[in-house]
Image (cartoon, rainbow, N blue to C red; front, side, top):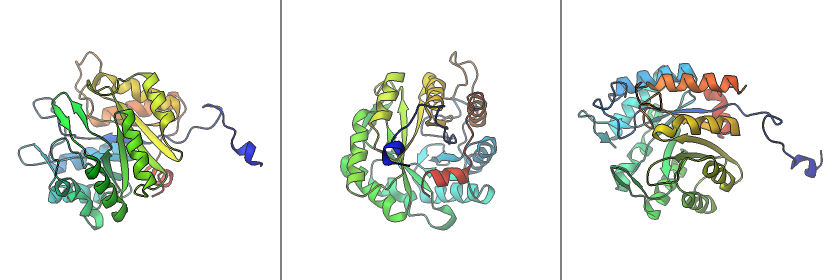
Length: 291
């Protein structure tokens, strides 16, 4: 086969779709029991939800920790209990730990989970590649902190989940790649629809995907009411998806049905089946992400 022939590609489904990676964002920093009874807060609840989501079709779980009062926590001992507990139940399930700056800004706090060892070491960690405003306040991610977190992940062999909510965040990710702090294949998580960031339109999703570097594997989600719409677009486009109560506590646009994480996973599995996309197993996902 000539190099010219190798460069030829056709749109899906003329080219085979890759298996669909489902990433379940279980808890986040916002939902509380007052918002929904279905958000898992205690370590045993998060572990049980991770198991249910894995059995339903999720290959990655994105985990946050909460303290005894239900507040977001960076404490490594809580993350250790969560991650080790998930590994005991589902050893192959990929675990992505948050390093979010939405509640804690100090590097040592955000990086604490990256230093866990053995069964408690995460496979991946979130890396928000820029500062942004949420309705409840800013998430500050200074370039120095982003680079230090990327360097720590690189040293520890933890793959970054590059979180992108604005076009400039792709530029920051490419700077990290240029400095050798992120290795291919790159995993981008595109989150659209927050009130103060990039709107959740098909045009914006397509433009962001086109701006990603080569050797990128991308997933997309819409926040709140945009969740399902962006999920479906990503499935049709050949990307991957993030679902979960972290991003949307409701199952329906009318906001009458409070959703569980496993319901959201099962819905994507059903939709993907109609579009004839195979669901990626954790083993396939590890291979696709170079782990």
